[in-house]
Length: 349
Image (cartoon, rainbow, N blue to C red):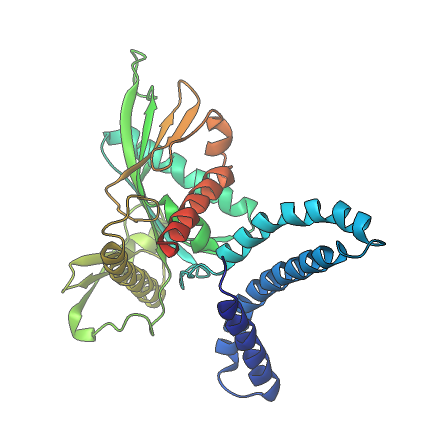
Protein backbone atom coordinates (compact mmCIF):
# COMPACT_ATOMS: atom_id res chain seq x y z
CA UNK A 1 0.00 0.00 0.00
CA UNK A 2 1.30 3.44 -0.93
CA UNK A 3 1.38 5.87 2.04
CA UNK A 4 -1.04 8.70 1.23
CA UNK A 5 0.82 11.08 3.53
CA UNK A 6 3.95 10.71 1.40
CA UNK A 7 1.95 11.50 -1.75
CA UNK A 8 0.45 14.56 -0.09
CA UNK A 9 3.91 15.83 0.94
CA UNK A 10 5.22 15.57 -2.64
CA UNK A 11 2.24 17.49 -4.04
CA UNK A 12 2.69 20.19 -1.39
CA UNK A 13 6.38 20.47 -2.24
CA UNK A 14 5.57 21.02 -5.92
CA UNK A 15 3.09 23.76 -4.99
CA UNK A 16 5.78 25.41 -2.84
CA UNK A 17 8.35 25.27 -5.66
CA UNK A 18 5.84 26.70 -8.16
CA UNK A 19 5.03 29.56 -5.76
CA UNK A 20 8.73 30.37 -5.22
CA UNK A 21 9.38 30.37 -8.97
CA UNK A 22 6.40 32.68 -9.59
CA UNK A 23 7.59 35.05 -6.86
CA UNK A 24 11.15 35.03 -8.23
CA UNK A 25 12.64 33.96 -4.92
CA UNK A 26 15.53 31.57 -4.30
CA UNK A 27 17.88 29.99 -6.80
CA UNK A 28 15.79 29.91 -9.98
CA UNK A 29 18.02 27.30 -11.65
CA UNK A 30 17.84 24.98 -8.65
CA UNK A 31 14.08 25.49 -8.32
CA UNK A 32 13.72 24.75 -12.03
CA UNK A 33 15.60 21.46 -11.67
CA UNK A 34 13.46 20.44 -8.69
CA UNK A 35 10.29 21.38 -10.57
CA UNK A 36 11.37 19.27 -13.55
CA UNK A 37 11.89 16.29 -11.22
CA UNK A 38 8.66 16.72 -9.24
CA UNK A 39 6.24 17.52 -12.07
CA UNK A 40 6.16 14.01 -13.67
CA UNK A 41 5.97 12.40 -10.21
CA UNK A 42 2.97 14.51 -9.24
CA UNK A 43 1.32 13.78 -12.61
CA UNK A 44 1.65 10.06 -11.85
CA UNK A 45 0.24 10.60 -8.35
CA UNK A 46 -2.73 12.57 -9.67
CA UNK A 47 -3.49 9.85 -12.22
CA UNK A 48 -3.40 7.24 -9.44
CA UNK A 49 -5.60 9.33 -7.13
CA UNK A 50 -8.11 9.90 -9.94
CA UNK A 51 -8.32 6.15 -10.46
CA UNK A 52 -8.97 5.63 -6.72
CA UNK A 53 -11.70 8.29 -6.84
CA UNK A 54 -13.30 6.62 -9.87
CA UNK A 55 -13.21 3.28 -8.06
CA UNK A 56 -14.85 4.76 -4.96
CA UNK A 57 -17.53 6.40 -7.08
CA UNK A 58 -18.28 3.15 -8.93
CA UNK A 59 -18.49 1.26 -5.63
CA UNK A 60 -20.97 3.82 -4.32
CA UNK A 61 -23.08 3.47 -7.49
CA UNK A 62 -23.68 -0.22 -6.70
CA UNK A 63 -26.26 0.79 -4.08
CA UNK A 64 -28.22 2.82 -6.63
CA UNK A 65 -30.59 0.53 -8.61
CA UNK A 66 -30.52 2.87 -11.60
CA UNK A 67 -26.70 3.05 -11.72
CA UNK A 68 -25.87 -0.50 -10.60
CA UNK A 69 -25.55 -1.96 -14.12
CA UNK A 70 -23.19 0.81 -15.21
CA UNK A 71 -21.08 0.38 -12.06
CA UNK A 72 -20.81 -3.38 -12.55
CA UNK A 73 -19.61 -2.72 -16.10
CA UNK A 74 -16.96 -0.17 -15.07
CA UNK A 75 -15.57 -1.82 -11.92
CA UNK A 76 -13.65 -4.72 -13.56
CA UNK A 77 -11.82 -2.28 -15.87
CA UNK A 78 -10.97 0.11 -13.03
CA UNK A 79 -9.77 -2.71 -10.76
CA UNK A 80 -7.63 -4.13 -13.57
CA UNK A 81 -5.88 -0.77 -13.97
CA UNK A 82 -5.10 -0.40 -10.25
CA UNK A 83 -2.00 -2.69 -9.91
CA UNK A 84 -0.29 -1.01 -12.88
CA UNK A 85 -1.10 2.47 -11.53
CA UNK A 86 0.26 1.54 -8.07
CA UNK A 87 3.45 0.17 -9.63
CA UNK A 88 3.92 3.34 -11.71
CA UNK A 89 3.65 5.49 -8.56
CA UNK A 90 6.06 3.24 -6.67
CA UNK A 91 8.61 3.63 -9.48
CA UNK A 92 8.08 7.40 -9.49
CA UNK A 93 8.80 7.46 -5.73
CA UNK A 94 12.07 5.53 -5.98
CA UNK A 95 15.12 7.50 -4.83
CA UNK A 96 16.71 9.32 -7.75
CA UNK A 97 20.37 9.06 -8.66
CA UNK A 98 21.36 12.72 -8.70
CA UNK A 99 23.81 12.02 -11.52
CA UNK A 100 21.23 10.50 -13.90
CA UNK A 101 20.59 13.74 -15.80
CA UNK A 102 24.29 14.52 -16.28
CA UNK A 103 26.44 14.06 -19.38
CA UNK A 104 28.63 10.96 -19.26
CA UNK A 105 32.33 10.33 -19.77
CA UNK A 106 32.77 7.01 -21.59
CA UNK A 107 36.14 5.24 -21.43
CA UNK A 108 36.98 2.14 -23.49
CA UNK A 109 40.25 0.19 -23.30
CA UNK A 110 41.33 -3.23 -24.58
CA UNK A 111 41.75 -6.00 -22.02
CA UNK A 112 43.17 -9.48 -22.51
CA UNK A 113 43.61 -10.60 -26.10
CA UNK A 114 46.26 -8.43 -27.72
CA UNK A 115 45.43 -7.05 -31.17
CA UNK A 116 42.01 -8.73 -31.20
CA UNK A 117 41.10 -7.00 -27.92
CA UNK A 118 42.05 -3.64 -29.44
CA UNK A 119 39.90 -4.37 -32.52
CA UNK A 120 36.97 -5.35 -30.28
CA UNK A 121 37.41 -2.15 -28.26
CA UNK A 122 37.04 -0.27 -31.56
CA UNK A 123 33.87 -2.25 -32.34
CA UNK A 124 32.40 -1.29 -28.95
CA UNK A 125 33.26 2.35 -29.57
CA UNK A 126 31.40 2.29 -32.89
CA UNK A 127 28.45 0.55 -31.20
CA UNK A 128 28.14 3.28 -28.58
CA UNK A 129 28.68 6.06 -31.13
CA UNK A 130 25.86 4.71 -33.31
CA UNK A 131 23.66 4.39 -30.25
CA UNK A 132 24.40 8.02 -29.38
CA UNK A 133 23.53 9.08 -32.93
CA UNK A 134 20.23 7.19 -32.77
CA UNK A 135 19.26 9.18 -29.66
CA UNK A 136 20.55 12.52 -30.93
CA UNK A 137 23.28 12.72 -28.29
CA UNK A 138 26.44 14.77 -28.76
CA UNK A 139 29.64 12.69 -29.06
CA UNK A 140 32.88 14.59 -28.29
CA UNK A 141 36.17 12.68 -28.39
CA UNK A 142 38.51 13.73 -25.58
CA UNK A 143 41.34 11.24 -26.09
CA UNK A 144 41.80 8.55 -28.74
CA UNK A 145 44.80 6.28 -29.30
CA UNK A 146 44.65 3.80 -32.17
CA UNK A 147 46.44 0.45 -32.41
CA UNK A 148 48.49 -0.64 -35.40
CA UNK A 149 45.66 -2.70 -36.95
CA UNK A 150 43.04 0.02 -36.60
CA UNK A 151 41.78 -0.96 -33.19
CA UNK A 152 41.76 1.13 -30.03
CA UNK A 153 44.39 1.46 -27.35
CA UNK A 154 42.22 3.97 -25.50
CA UNK A 155 39.13 6.08 -26.07
CA UNK A 156 37.70 8.76 -23.78
CA UNK A 157 34.50 10.46 -24.95
CA UNK A 158 32.09 13.00 -23.47
CA UNK A 159 28.46 12.22 -24.35
CA UNK A 160 25.88 14.92 -23.82
CA UNK A 161 22.10 14.60 -24.13
CA UNK A 162 18.91 13.97 -22.20
CA UNK A 163 19.34 11.23 -19.57
CA UNK A 164 22.68 10.05 -20.97
CA UNK A 165 24.22 8.80 -17.72
CA UNK A 166 20.95 7.19 -16.61
CA UNK A 167 20.87 5.19 -19.84
CA UNK A 168 24.54 4.21 -20.04
CA UNK A 169 25.61 3.76 -16.41
CA UNK A 170 25.03 -0.01 -16.42
CA UNK A 171 27.50 -0.47 -19.30
CA UNK A 172 30.53 -0.32 -16.99
CA UNK A 173 32.47 -3.55 -16.71
CA UNK A 174 34.31 -6.16 -18.77
CA UNK A 175 32.83 -6.95 -22.20
CA UNK A 176 34.00 -10.30 -23.60
CA UNK A 177 34.02 -11.31 -27.28
CA UNK A 178 34.19 -14.79 -28.81
CA UNK A 179 34.96 -14.87 -32.53
CA UNK A 180 37.51 -15.82 -35.19
CA UNK A 181 39.99 -12.90 -35.32
CA UNK A 182 40.88 -11.32 -38.65
CA UNK A 183 44.49 -12.23 -37.89
CA UNK A 184 43.64 -15.93 -37.35
CA UNK A 185 44.30 -18.10 -40.42
CA UNK A 186 43.23 -21.39 -38.84
CA UNK A 187 39.62 -20.39 -38.22
CA UNK A 188 39.86 -20.90 -34.46
CA UNK A 189 37.55 -18.97 -32.13
CA UNK A 190 39.42 -16.71 -29.72
CA UNK A 191 38.19 -15.03 -26.56
CA UNK A 192 39.30 -11.50 -25.74
CA UNK A 193 37.92 -8.60 -23.78
CA UNK A 194 37.64 -4.84 -23.42
CA UNK A 195 36.76 -2.72 -20.41
CA UNK A 196 34.12 -0.01 -20.43
CA UNK A 197 33.73 2.70 -17.79
CA UNK A 198 30.84 5.17 -17.78
CA UNK A 199 31.33 8.10 -15.40
CA UNK A 200 28.97 10.97 -14.61
CA UNK A 201 30.45 14.32 -15.55
CA UNK A 202 31.47 16.21 -12.42
CA UNK A 203 31.44 19.94 -11.76
CA UNK A 204 33.90 21.94 -9.67
CA UNK A 205 31.31 22.13 -6.88
CA UNK A 206 31.24 18.30 -6.73
CA UNK A 207 34.98 17.77 -6.46
CA UNK A 208 37.39 20.36 -5.09
CA UNK A 209 40.90 19.57 -6.33
CA UNK A 210 43.78 21.06 -4.36
CA UNK A 211 46.32 22.53 -6.83
CA UNK A 212 49.08 21.11 -4.62
CA UNK A 213 47.69 17.60 -5.23
CA UNK A 214 48.25 17.62 -8.99
CA UNK A 215 51.27 17.64 -11.28
CA UNK A 216 50.82 18.98 -14.81
CA UNK A 217 53.24 17.92 -17.56
CA UNK A 218 53.25 19.07 -21.18
CA UNK A 219 54.57 16.94 -24.01
CA UNK A 220 54.43 16.49 -27.75
CA UNK A 221 51.31 14.86 -29.09
CA UNK A 222 51.83 11.46 -30.68
CA UNK A 223 50.16 9.90 -33.68
CA UNK A 224 48.72 11.43 -36.83
CA UNK A 225 48.11 15.12 -36.83
CA UNK A 226 50.51 16.75 -39.21
CA UNK A 227 53.40 19.11 -38.59
CA UNK A 228 51.58 21.13 -35.92
CA UNK A 229 51.02 18.13 -33.64
CA UNK A 230 54.52 16.76 -34.09
CA UNK A 231 56.37 19.98 -33.28
CA UNK A 232 54.21 21.59 -30.58
CA UNK A 233 54.30 20.69 -26.87
CA UNK A 234 50.51 20.92 -26.63
CA UNK A 235 49.53 17.62 -25.05
CA UNK A 236 48.83 17.74 -21.32
CA UNK A 237 49.19 15.02 -18.70
CA UNK A 238 47.75 15.63 -15.24
CA UNK A 239 48.67 13.34 -12.35
CA UNK A 240 46.54 13.40 -9.21
CA UNK A 241 49.15 12.52 -6.62
CA UNK A 242 46.92 11.26 -3.72
CA UNK A 243 44.98 8.81 -5.92
CA UNK A 244 47.58 8.09 -8.60
CA UNK A 245 45.05 8.86 -11.36
CA UNK A 246 46.69 10.03 -14.60
CA UNK A 247 44.75 11.86 -17.33
CA UNK A 248 46.00 12.98 -20.72
CA UNK A 249 44.57 15.12 -23.50
CA UNK A 250 46.15 15.67 -26.92
CA UNK A 251 44.16 18.36 -28.71
CA UNK A 252 46.03 21.15 -30.55
CA UNK A 253 45.33 23.77 -27.86
CA UNK A 254 47.31 23.38 -24.65
CA UNK A 255 44.78 25.54 -22.78
CA UNK A 256 41.93 23.34 -24.02
CA UNK A 257 43.88 20.22 -23.08
CA UNK A 258 44.25 21.41 -19.49
CA UNK A 259 40.52 22.09 -19.35
CA UNK A 260 39.63 18.67 -20.80
CA UNK A 261 42.08 16.78 -18.59
CA UNK A 262 40.75 18.48 -15.45
CA UNK A 263 37.21 17.65 -16.55
CA UNK A 264 38.07 13.96 -16.89
CA UNK A 265 40.03 13.97 -13.62
CA UNK A 266 37.02 15.42 -11.77
CA UNK A 267 34.78 12.75 -13.32
CA UNK A 268 37.09 9.93 -12.20
CA UNK A 269 37.44 11.29 -8.65
CA UNK A 270 33.68 11.89 -8.44
CA UNK A 271 33.03 8.35 -9.67
CA UNK A 272 35.45 6.92 -7.10
CA UNK A 273 33.50 8.67 -4.32
CA UNK A 274 30.20 7.37 -5.70
CA UNK A 275 31.55 3.82 -5.83
CA UNK A 276 32.65 4.02 -2.18
CA UNK A 277 29.16 5.11 -1.15
CA UNK A 278 27.44 2.52 -3.37
CA UNK A 279 29.66 -0.30 -2.10
CA UNK A 280 28.88 0.53 1.52
CA UNK A 281 25.16 0.78 0.77
CA UNK A 282 25.00 -2.40 -1.29
CA UNK A 283 27.26 -4.68 0.73
CA UNK A 284 24.37 -7.08 1.36
CA UNK A 285 22.70 -6.70 -2.04
CA UNK A 286 22.67 -9.82 -4.21
CA UNK A 287 22.06 -8.03 -7.48
CA UNK A 288 25.18 -6.75 -9.22
CA UNK A 289 23.29 -4.48 -11.61
CA UNK A 290 24.64 -0.98 -11.21
CA UNK A 291 27.53 -2.02 -8.98
CA UNK A 292 29.95 -0.28 -11.33
CA UNK A 293 32.62 -2.91 -10.66
CA UNK A 294 35.05 -2.36 -13.53
CA UNK A 295 36.54 -5.86 -13.14
CA UNK A 296 33.20 -7.65 -13.39
CA UNK A 297 32.53 -9.59 -16.60
CA UNK A 298 29.13 -8.26 -17.52
CA UNK A 299 28.51 -9.34 -21.12
CA UNK A 300 29.62 -11.81 -23.80
CA UNK A 301 29.33 -11.21 -27.55
CA UNK A 302 29.47 -14.55 -29.40
CA UNK A 303 29.86 -13.82 -33.12
CA UNK A 304 29.70 -17.40 -34.53
CA UNK A 305 26.28 -17.89 -32.89
CA UNK A 306 25.12 -14.28 -33.31
CA UNK A 307 24.44 -14.20 -29.59
CA UNK A 308 24.77 -11.57 -26.84
CA UNK A 309 24.42 -12.55 -23.19
CA UNK A 310 24.29 -10.14 -20.27
CA UNK A 311 25.42 -12.24 -17.30
CA UNK A 312 24.01 -9.95 -14.59
CA UNK A 313 20.38 -10.55 -15.52
CA UNK A 314 20.65 -13.69 -17.64
CA UNK A 315 19.45 -11.93 -20.78
CA UNK A 316 20.35 -13.62 -24.08
CA UNK A 317 19.53 -12.11 -27.47
CA UNK A 318 20.20 -13.66 -30.89
CA UNK A 319 20.55 -10.46 -32.91
CA UNK A 320 24.17 -9.54 -32.47
CA UNK A 321 24.40 -7.72 -35.82
CA UNK A 322 21.79 -5.15 -34.78
CA UNK A 323 23.34 -4.81 -31.31
CA UNK A 324 26.76 -4.00 -32.77
CA UNK A 325 25.02 -1.35 -34.89
CA UNK A 326 23.99 0.44 -31.68
CA UNK A 327 20.58 -1.15 -31.11
CA UNK A 328 21.05 -1.76 -27.37
CA UNK A 329 17.88 -0.18 -25.95
CA UNK A 330 16.35 -3.58 -25.14
CA UNK A 331 19.39 -4.46 -23.04
CA UNK A 332 19.44 -1.10 -21.26
CA UNK A 333 15.68 -1.27 -20.57
CA UNK A 334 16.04 -4.76 -19.04
CA UNK A 335 18.95 -3.66 -16.83
CA UNK A 336 17.02 -0.57 -15.70
CA UNK A 337 13.94 -2.67 -14.87
CA UNK A 338 16.04 -5.11 -12.84
CA UNK A 339 17.66 -2.24 -10.94
CA UNK A 340 14.26 -0.71 -10.19
CA UNK A 341 12.95 -4.08 -8.99
CA UNK A 342 15.87 -4.42 -6.56
CA UNK A 343 15.22 -0.90 -5.20
CA UNK A 344 11.52 -1.68 -4.73
CA UNK A 345 12.41 -4.88 -2.88
CA UNK A 346 14.70 -2.92 -0.54
CA UNK A 347 11.97 -0.35 0.16
CA UNK A 348 9.50 -3.11 1.07
CA UNK A 349 11.82 -4.76 3.63
